[in-house]
Image (tube, rainbow, N blue to C red; front, top):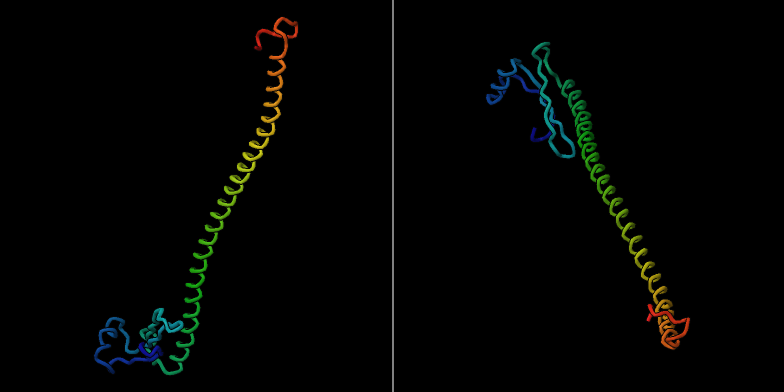
Length: 154
């Protein structure tokens, strides 16, 4: 496993493997790591419990090829999962940007409306002030007894 290579192990060759053989109930097994870009993804451990057929080098090579394909599939699955997460985050960010843009446009419209209102009020106030001043001036110049003079406006 440390060398990331597939191999066949037979019962009785190494004392430390006896517990594994006893657990599986077989007399031979193969160990094939699932490796992707120097990263251990897992391990495949087939045995010969049912067939009792010896596991030879060709079987180990075939298992190694299958393990490689399985490793690629697992890695692609993990990459796809990460990509989906990133796409989801980007979609959320785009949604927030769209909401912010909408709010900004609304604020800009309200600001422009406020500026126009202020300008219109200014443009109306100036002539009204002049007209009011002129009317007061005329009113003062009129004789108090004349029919054009109205007592309520003085």
